Every structure is written in structure tokens, then in C-alpha cells.
Length: 231
Image (cartoon, rainbow, N blue to C red; front, side, top):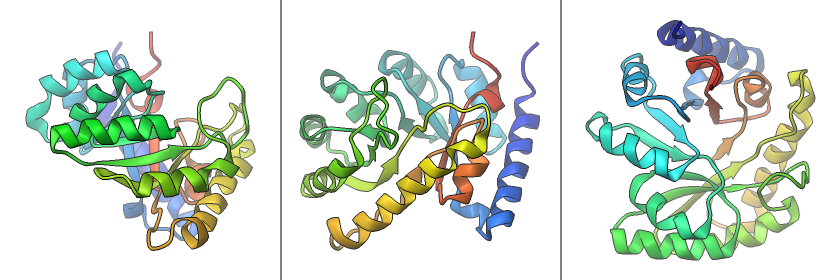
């Protein structure tokens, strides 16, 4: 049985409103990104019809087919998976936002590819806030230097930070990691990147996005709660 996507999206929006009310935030500040890994273009089209206009993909090859098939929608596409430098050319031509920038080498190649495409792109730095060896991302203490480097590149618009905290069965255990990313962003905006404001915090997924909203998330990445569990 296929999930009731329209009903699921309505429920998520209610949860967003409730989470925002609890911390005195405006739900309009939250961008809901539907994570569409393994989801067919037809189902993405149905989700778009319910009001989701932002979609996140993790694999370049899979995304290429979907973005082409759904070009007429005018959706905003976010790359949220680990990006190898040799795949930067594909991301530069397909996506509007990259959430996982984690090196100067990748930033240079992406800027170069965007220049040749005549495009620009919003980028977020992926921060490995918990220092997990199995996860991508820069250490918090490296974020300021990379932010300054990216800010000087053409065609890249540094717009914020992203993190994936350790997995917990109890969502509230994610709270300190979300708070740490917010505090890092505030410190960087005040000191490390003069004249630029890092507005976006991409953090929170199906199991913990309410906690992320309470700690300042502006983008949440939700897949399972919309489309069901992946095969």
C-alpha cells in the first residue's frame, strides 16, 4: 500500500506549526524539503501538488533523471548527499542549493563549473558537529576558515550551515548538537564572515525535526514521514 502523501504532508505541517508555537517562531521561517531518494517522478509530482516545492536528492545519477522529467514544475532542488569533486559538474547544472560543501577543493571545482554554466548556487557548509568518523563534514573549528574561502569565490552564495547529528531513539538527545550548530553559526556571522549573514540552518529529519526547529532550524529534510520507508 502506498503512503497517503497528502495526509502525511498535512500532518508534518501541523507538527511544524506546533513546534514553532512552542518556541515562539513563525512557521513561515521553515523550509520543508521533501527527501525523494528512491521516490518516482510521479510521486514527487503528487507531493508538489500538495504544496511542497523543495526536494532533496542524495545521488547525482538518480537526480539527473528526475530533475529532467520534472523540469516543468519549477521546483527547487537541493543536493543533500556527500558530493565527490568529480561529480561537481553535474550538481552545478542541476541543483539550486548544495547542503554538503566540506572542502576548498570542492568549492573551487563547483565555482568553476558554475561559471561555465552561467549559474550561481547557494551552498551550506556541512559541519560534523559530533566528530563522528563515519560521517562527512568539516570540524567546527574549521568552519570559519572555509566560510571565508567560499565567500570570496564567484558563483557561490554562502547561505548557512548543515549537520546530521548522531542517531538517537529519543529525539531530545539531538538537541545539544542542533544547539551547537546554531551557536557556531551565530559566532561565525558575528566574527568570521564579516558583512555576510549565514541565515540558513539545515538540520532535522523525520525523527527529530521538532527538536531542530526549537534550536533554530530554517530547513528540515523529511523523507520517511512523507513517502514511507525506503525499500
